[in-house]
Image 1 (cartoon, rainbow, N blue to C red):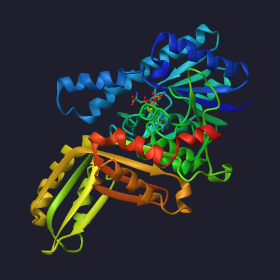
Image 2 (tube, rainbow, N blue to C red):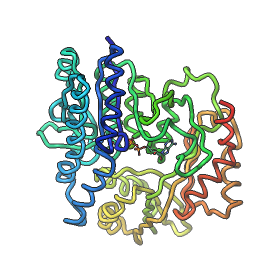
Image 3 (tube, rainbow, N blue to C red):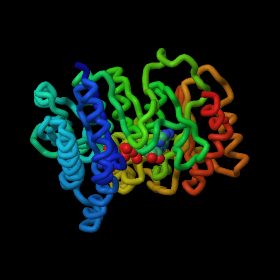
Amino acid sequence: MSIIVEKYGGTSVGSIERIQSVSKNVAKQVRQGYKAVVVVSAMSGETNRLVALAKSMTARPSDREMDTLLSTGEQVTIALFALALQNLEIPAQSFTGFQVPIVTDSVHSRARITNIEVESILAVLNAGKVAVVAGFQGINSTNEITTLGRGGSDTTAVALAAALKAKECRIYTDVDGVYTADPRVVEGASRIPKITYEEMLEMSGSGAKVMQIRAVEFASKYEIPLRVLSSFEPDEGTIITKEEDIMEQPKISGITSVDGEAKVTVRGVPDRPGIAYSILGPISDAHINVDMIVQNIGTDETTDLTFTVNQDDLHTALDVLAPVVRELDAETVVGDKNLAKISVIGVGMRSHAGIATTMFKALAEKGINIQIISTSEIKISVTIDREYRELAVRTLHSAFRLEERGKKE
Ligand code: ADP
Ligand code: ASP
Ligand code: MG
C-alpha cells in the first residue's frame, strides 16, 4: 500500500470549517487505499500573532523562547485535524515534532532536519490510522524545541516523504500551483504545469514563498515527486520534477521578488588578501545568510565590500562587524534596509543569449535604477529601491511575455 504525504498550509486550515473541508479530502485518499500522512501548519495568522506577542514583550526576543512559543501554533492544528478525521470515522493520531521525533540541529529559528525516526509513524499507519504531524517544528539532541524557519512546514512534509519513501508529496495551499510570478502581484501570471527542481530552488530562494527552499532541496536530493495544488479546488497543480521529465523548456520560467533585503557596505578596507574572509567569516559564524556580494577596488589601495542579507539580520550583521571594522582599520560599515531583489529564472537561459539585455532594457525604460547585479547559470538578480518592486516584476513579466505561456498550455 502506497504512502502519500499531504501538507496543508495556514489558509487551508485557517478555520474549523476549512479543517473539516480538507479533512474530507484526506478521507477520500484513505478510502482509495492510501496510507496518509498529513502535515499541517498553524492556522493562518497564528504564527504572526505569536511573533507579535513576543515583540510586545521585548524588541529582540531570544531564539530559544521564540521556538517554544511559535511551535504551539502547529500543535493546535494537529489535534483539531485529527478530531476532524475521527468525526469522519477515519482513525487518526496527532504527532508533535518531539513525538515523531523529527530531530534537528540546534540553530533555533532556522534549524535543519538531521534525522527522522519513522517507526512511530509507520506503526500508526500500519494500524490503519492517519498520522497528523505538526509541521515547522523539531527537537534537537538535548530535547530543546526548534523550528525550521518561516514556511518550514513544507520542509517537514518533504523530509517525511523522503524518510517514508512516499509515492508523492502534495503541498496544498491557497493558489492552484506555481505561477510565472506571484499571482498577487501580477494579475496575468500563468500557472506552470511542470517545473524542474533546479528552477524551483532558484524561485524559492529568491522570493516565491509558495514553497520553502529547504523543502525543494530535500525533494531534489531524494527525487521526491512534488505537487503544489489548491486545497480549495484541487486540480492538477504544478509538478516539480527532474529536468529529463519535462519535454519542452521555455526560455524563462518565472520572475520573483524579495522585499526586505538589506545591504551592508564596509567602506575603505585596506586592500590585502583575506579581506573577504575577515568580513564574511564572522557573518557566517553568526548564522547569517549572505546573498549577493560585490567588491569594488578603489584607487587609493582600499576597497569597498557590499553584501546583502535578510533585513531581520541587519542589526546583528552591523553588531558583528563593528569590531571587525576596527581590527581591519577600515573606514566604516553602513546598512541600508530599503532594497528589493528582483530575479528572472529559467533553465532555458543556458542556451539563449540576450536575457540580461532584455531585463536591463525593460527596467531602464521604466527609470528603475539597478544597484547590484548577480547571476547564476539559470538566474539573473538585481537589487533596486523597494518602492519599485511590484512595478519591476510586472515590467519583466510582460517583457518576457510570460502572460502568453498560460494561453499556449
Ligand atoms: P501556505 O500557507 O499554504 O504555506 P504560503 O502563503 O506560504 O501558503 O504560499 C502561498 C502564497 O505564495 C500564494 O498565496 C502566493 O501569493 C505566493 N506566491 C509567491 N510567488 C508565487 C508563485 N510564483 N506562484 C504561486 N504562488 C506564489
Ligand atoms: N506556521 C509557520 C509559518 O507561518 C510554518 C508554516 O506555515 O509553514 O511560517
Ligand atoms: Mg508556506
